[in-house]
Image (cartoon, rainbow, N blue to C red; front, side, top):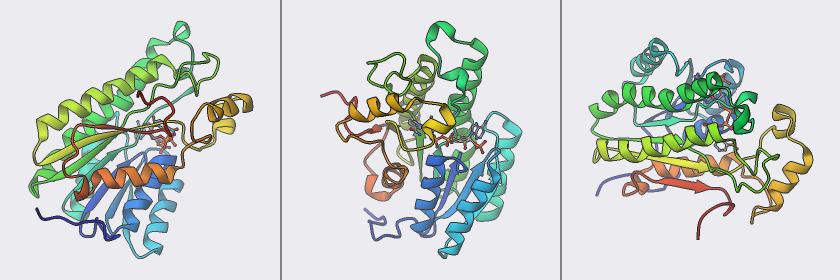
Length: 267
Ligand SMILES: NC(=O)c1ccc[n+]([C@@H]2O[C@H](COP(=O)([O-])OP(=O)(O)OC[C@H]3O[C@@H](n4cnc5c(N)ncnc54)[C@H](OP(=O)(O)O)[C@@H]3O)[C@@H](O)[C@H]2O)c1
């Protein structure tokens, strides 16, 4: 079987498209692809400055990248984004759907659910990922192969309903469960040319206290209940995405890979 094995430049000559790349995990993933020789299409919705910093870091290191605005809930925006990437690079080898919504309305107990907020959540995370796959697949097919990586999530260990890290909210889990179904069924639909897999991260380091107002004791509780006694590092997520996108993962298809330190993995 031909392919590029892990020589540190697994994506030379390939194009990797990352949505939500102005965010924590998408940004780390985009940097990882840039480091390994891909031309990187950095998608951002509102975080233009962050996306441009990612592009600058890749270009400064001798790579190729460009930032493009994208709203995955807007079909015209998705089509424009794909067209820009196609016009710039002429191919898409990898699509990473890292765009995702988590607003305050998505972190409440189910009895306080807003149907409007849940609709927006599903529209961004699930329909947005579908729109991206649907638009990118014809370009991938031109070169006879491709890899798609979606972002699901763990559902938490459910031990403390007051701690939104250990007890992950219902609407968010419902959206991430839909990503699992999308991943598995799309993998079968697109094989053998295009592989589709997903990541289910546990809590990954970020601005939990500042952005989400998570109480320090809840952060300590969540870390204490993880066998690794810490949150994940965005670079650990990036490494897993790169592996799934690489030829070395050529026989992995339709899987949801848990990257969560053994936190909730069933035995
Ligand atoms: N971090 C974790 O611990 C964790 C754990 C499990 C799963 N995940 C999942 O991993 C993915 C990435 O999470 P993250 O931590 O990197 O979150 P993040 O820092 O909030 O980044 C998510 C990005 O999604 C983008 N986005 C939101 N709505 C969008 C839309 N309509 N169109 C296009 N882009 C949109 C945002 O773009 P702008 O900023 O440009 O507006 C944001 O930068 C998400 O699906 C999340 O649910 C994360």
